[in-house]
Image 1 (cartoon, helix red, strand yellow):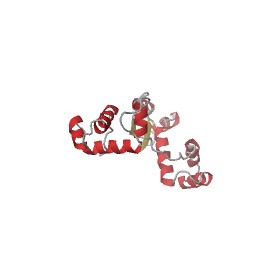
Image 2 (cartoon, rainbow, N blue to C red):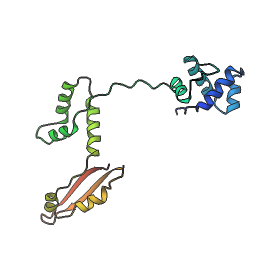
Image 3 (cartoon, one colour):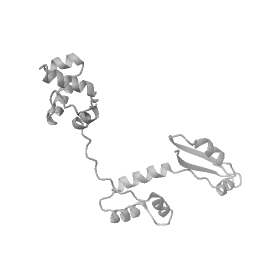
Image 4 (cartoon, rainbow, N blue to C red):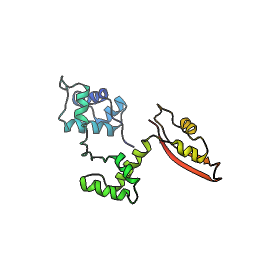
Length: 184
């Protein structure tokens, strides 16, 4: 399990006790109630930043934290495809995600790999609103809109998978509709 960062107040205490009073790491740990490994890590980071005691006056808590815990460099963001276009293209006969990914990869050689492409598309698809057409409701002989309204509650940030079981009264058969509701 990762260690939690020490508060800036405790880091200032550690630096003061170590540099000003000359206490050992074990004594500092017992004094302020922090593990010896956390003390050692704090002192290692301070030495790497060439910080001692007293700290410079212009070094407030935010600046101290920025020096001791610099933000890691983020990897270059990959350009995401237009998933609305991808979704529309997938509706055409003979078009697969693999073909669309190959087109995307030809346009962006440093872009997403196939698995990430599919994962982003699935997440995008899950965030889309569920649309139930009246013609589908008439064909199945049931009112699906009321059920969908109970499922999709605006203002909720939950995502849920729902299964609707619809029975057609005209053709005497059972139809299963499965959809994912991405509720914004």
